[in-house]
Picture 1: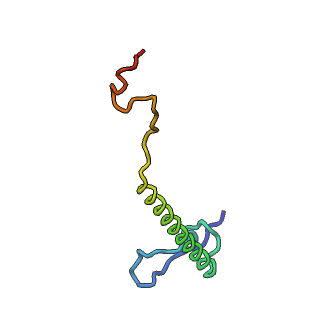
Picture 2: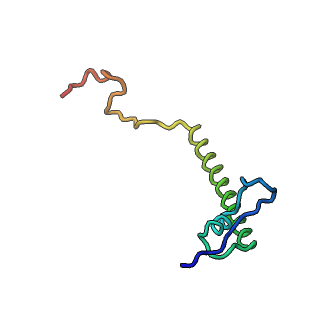
Picture 3: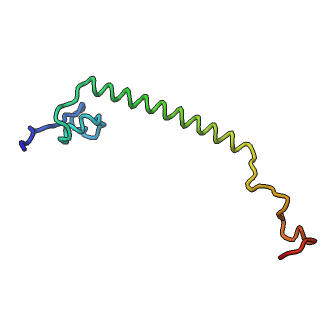
Length: 97
């Protein structure tokens, strides 16, 4: 297997190495992909990520609204059955087995 040529990164601001790189460029720099990404590919993936974020925010807001409305309605925690005591000793006139 032949070693690929040297790959490097030049930051926009000299000396500022802590910046966000698109995942495609990160993969190319680390040798996980053969060819450098195109600008169109990076922009397409960025648009897809933004679309997923918007959809995720919409789903989270919808779920939060649904859970908020359900907490306002008091739901019984246990079924209310006539044959069972609600308080111990309530049916003291009945025989116990």
